[in-house]
Amino acid sequence: MPVPPPLKVLIVDDEPLARQRLEDLLNQQPDVEIIGMVNNGRKAVEAILHSKPDLVFLDVQMPGLTGVEVVQEIGAAQMPVVIFVTAYDQYALKAFDLAALDYLVKPFDDERFEQAFERARQVLKLHEFKDLGDRLVPLLERPAEPSPPPRFLERIAVEMRGQVRVVQVRQIEYITASGAYAELHVGPQTFIIRERMQTLEERLDPEVFFRIHRSTIVRLDQIEALLYNSGGDYAVRLKDGARLGISRGRREALEQRLGLDILGEDT
Image (cartoon, rainbow, N blue to C red; front, side, top):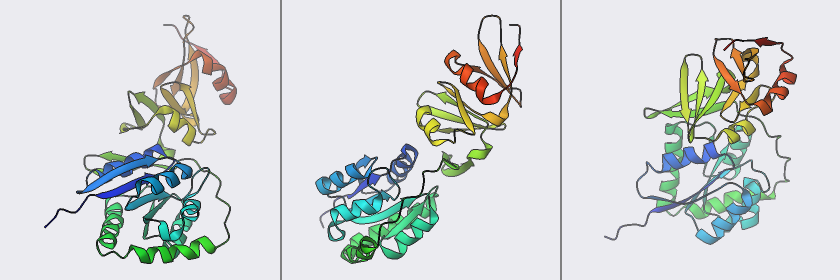
């Protein structure tokens, strides 16, 4: 009996954390080939038409073309099997009811991913995916709804020892860079994720977090004081006593945000 070809999967999401999460989970599946990961709807259209994936994990909310607009551009009949991915429950439920094979609401755990993926595998095995094209049509015929305003991260999924831990952003006191990774400091605990500081800075609420150094992001309400020494170096002291260095180019902006007096400190 000939060996069936691997399942070709395309990942479409504008969030690096979400793409990495799906890639890690798919790499644990047998007979799966990730043929690409793209970060916007326009690239998704090109990848789907060119690479002909069997299955697409498709983000609903993206700049440029949304997930629904990707389907509109390609056409329901030509779409592969789709699992929508979203941070908004109401949009996920609508997509599931009207169109998608399944949906994942971020952050999702391993078990929920497994359920959606196995359902897709069975549909492809039984060649039922043509019916899914018919289910996409009602979604395309509905008037387009305005996309919800972008929102900042509220939760971050952290993989540790074979499980996923969901860290609430409101609990993070500060974040430090460690090579290709970022360390989330939550009280006495430290959680490590594979993400760039630039991406985290863009996804965190600027009213709550401030990047004081290229390798440090701090929760503003955790800062107790600004410190300086005779050498001209600056730092912040947090409520738990931690001291973190400030880049000279960011000091003035931080002073304006906090309105704190600067305390002298001898080296």
